[in-house]
Image (cartoon, rainbow over the protein chains, first blue to last red):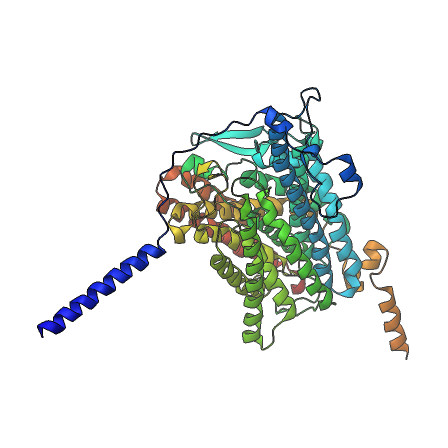
Length: 552
Length: 60
């Protein structure tokens, strides 16, 4: 017995020693305690030795790309001194800003192309007899909005935003009009940037900011053309869009993004990091969606939409092919919308653009799934237009949280959005009896608000954009990750959107109703708006074929 | 009724803004903001929309 114990003891000791040696083998070697090397200063004379490709080499071309972009390409401030450390450092700084300029401009161009997506989605969901009118509203909202924003809107929104390190400062945008409330400054609107010249705003960084913010504003405006389509007077559309581009959108955008009072809820009242809306679920989509609701209420439903006892009739759009094509264009453009909202690819935290892009695509996908399965289970078919709206709803909802959440959070947010848009469309259509031909109120309004709320729930506290957000140190963190006060800041944004933005838009639409009138006559509506309002049919050949078929 | 609806909708917004001055607790502010949101939604969905539905084009 004693022998067996002894053998067991020996085996145990051997095993332990073997494990210990293995553990030692797998452990990283302890670094030798080497004395820290003193930094070697680089002097201007070191730069003289950096070889530059010869002219002969350059004349032979550079198929390998190894002699293009060298020391010879760094601008020298003083040719007598030659290349200095100062020149190199300036070049590095300019490279960072150049990367951010190019990033922000190109993503802005992608967002601009979303106008085409909106145009074909809305036109496809309307009847062929209104195709020219619907398309023309979507086309000209770009110009009308841009004019209003250049004249007035940009100054109101961004005139007091202060500096932005990613774009090289943009210091001229430094004057915010504030009132003192509860002992704190409440920023209400900016004052620099009218015509992009006033207040020193003829500035390269300011131009980048203008282009990027302008295309966002235009996205909000084009949402309204969907909810009021097929019965809206063209002249009323022009006036309403101008007012929205000049005042409605810029006011809320200033409060959220332009150093206004909502952004400063964290710094002034300890509510998380203030109202956080990374790329505009609230600023762009909820503003557009709630204005669309105000407009649709005042313009009223299309003839034939409701029976005398209030039951809704389905009025089917004329081209599901271009509707889904438009959804793809919008999904593509969203890669500009969300990742571009870092306003830079180089700098502290900006490499998170990859995370923002992946969150965007995931939420769009789960949104499409959510809507498709909801419709499939409820009505027996996977409805195409609602699946498209589900994709858009997921994208709308992830817009605010895209920079603050992880992929699981993004997927859940998108899935909920996909179901929510279906329920909301039914509610608006059947309970509120507000006629929204394209579902703009539900896609952008309801899911814009959901996106704002979801920041306060799902923000995981891992994002780090320079160590602070809205002037408060730390990362944006929602309720599920321990900060309930962020949820209150988000709810405050929702209260402002519903209580202020809707009301402001409603009053604007009301005034236009009294002055110009929103609604076309019943005859024009029944005939289709293309000829009476625009002077040309969207599809003249369709008309000819219909007549010849009838004659036959 | 439309004007009453507009006023109630704005009142909801005002209550939400006042919440930051009325209490410093997160829970208290959240309750007040939620009351404000509910009031605004009632103003829009029930009162303003209700006023429009009374004279809706499909009733004529």
